[in-house]
Each structure stands twice: as C-alpha cells, then as structure tokens.
Image 1 (cartoon, rainbow, N blue to C red):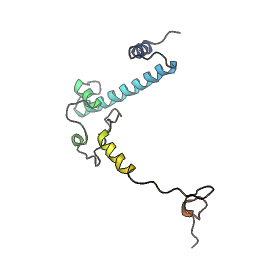
Image 2: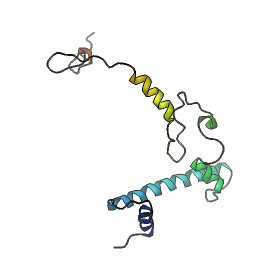
Image 3: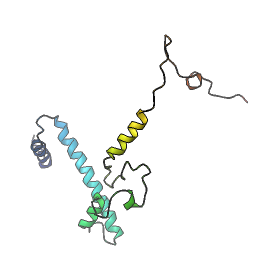
Image 4: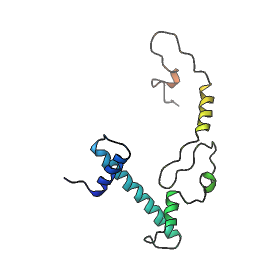
Length: 144
C-alpha cells in the first residue's frame, strides 16, 4: 500500500528534523492536525474577506495574515483592546495557539507562592482526613 503524497511529505519533514523512530500513526496525526489548522485559517480568512465586502472565495494575503495573527498590527491584549491583568499571557490567536507565557513573571509568581510555608504535618498515627465539614460523610442537608 502506497502512502498519499501528503503523508510522504510529512515523513520527509520528520527525516529532515532528525526524527528517525516514530509510530506510523504519528504521520496521520500530524496530517490531521495540519488539516484542522489550515481549515481554521481558511475559515477565519473567509470571514475577514466577507467583512471586507468580498466573497468567501476571494481571500487575499492580508486576510490570511489576519487569520494567522501575523498582521503586523501589533500583538497582545493592547492590540485587541483588552487588558491582561497579570501580564502573563497574550491572547489566543484565531488559529487557537496561545503565545508563550512571560517566563520572568511566572518565576516571580512561583517564588512568591513557594515562599509560603506548607502547613505542618500531623504526627498522629493513622489516616489523615480533612476537617469533618470537608469530608463526604458530613451532613449535606438541612431539615427545616
């Protein structure tokens, strides 16, 4: 059985990237992912074309750039008119991929959280259970 040309192209890309061993299903998973990604970009580009007064088949490079988030119009929440209260993440672009978080800010947040001491461990023998009101055996109804 011969592979489709797109599957052969994916195999060639994997070889070029130095991937020598992989499950055969990986090729088809990559193809499925690529197809869904391209479909999403094309659908978003068609929406931009319709908004610009053109038909869905009249997609321009600018529509594709907008659909992939590479429009050059700026990035982040400021471009979208939104605010990121923590400054950690940029918005999810139309293709569904979030940008990488701000590593320095995440390190600061982790240091602040990790500076708090953990609660002491109970030294009694046996199973440690949460307080009675948090256990599943607690009363969960009221009688009027």
